[in-house]
Image (cartoon, rainbow, N blue to C red; front, side):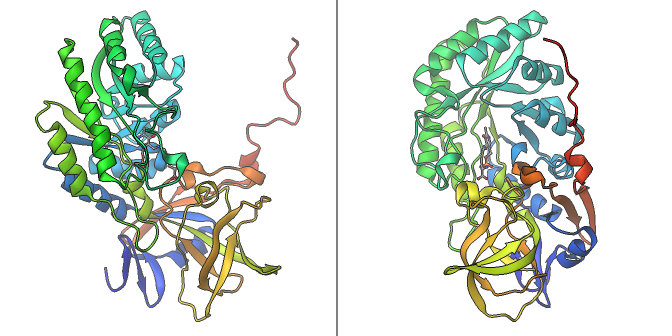
Length: 430
Ligand code: LLP
């Protein structure tokens, strides 16, 4: 795709940043900012790389919908051959609208309600990942009450530390985490499942966190899952056909950060499960979509305060929460070629919070108000975590495919903000 490929799907031509065959400035001109733009080629490329690396294994890729649940993005992944990994009835609804069949969906989540479980059974999901003994009992009860047998996988917490290269908030697999069933009780939980008439234990599951940079930690955790598989079989269970090893394949957000060693993961999984007679499932979110997206934002003002210099942009923490919530780094660059020398600024948003920033002490060209910026690698956990805080309408989302682009989510209007509210509540008597 010409000179200067940055990440797949994004490149520069005569200094201007393009997404596939569309200049980003043209999209901003047409739909305004802030706007998320996704490259369908980049999504397909990431999917193909992962599928290729894992190809020696009997494995299915179930996209973690939470990373980016836009219907058009879901459709790209569904057409590429992915299944879905969901955590709510809302994500189930989205996955079905995007074309995923029930049998291509696995349903995790630490706090499923009775209604969630009913939706899962109605949809005929491949299995429900249960995260506690009480949830297991409830799934059994709900299924038995409708004369059904629920396919379940036990989500295990393997008690591993330091597996993730990211922030403490994205670690899920150490002791004291709310996720999954403590590995020390997992064998008993499996016995409980085998005894329940309303459930069939068809899988074992684990997700130890996001940005898993340490293959050794991943291997240690998966080894526990393999041990559990052998124990469960020794206890007489012959129905486990799936081992879901979770997501967490890392993405490099800054120069010098390591890239995902996909072949390494495949080797580990092959060594541990190659002879296990199970079908593997992986649940990547970030890896498939992070680098496929940018957030376009316009510089509104430049100002200084004490020794600090600020660039005030029209996108803030309500649009992209990651910098503020996880101290996450996202590269930020002008969309068009600029000549200004570099300076060091905080790129902040309009939200009334000191923690509202896109970058802190960032060295970048000293561009004037009106400049269009691209916040890179914003395709995962960007729009999906956005909110209406400060009564800000959420951004538009655009999907690019070759020389075509289309609005996949219309920018919210001011009326959309209050659509479900009433100035006068519908009072009821107690
Ligand atoms: N499976 C389960 C059960 C999960 O909880 C998650 C992510 C995934 C798969 C996908 O993980 P991934 O492949 O995307 O790393 N908002 C944070 C990340 C939170 C991840 C939550 N669970 C961030 O922006 O960094």
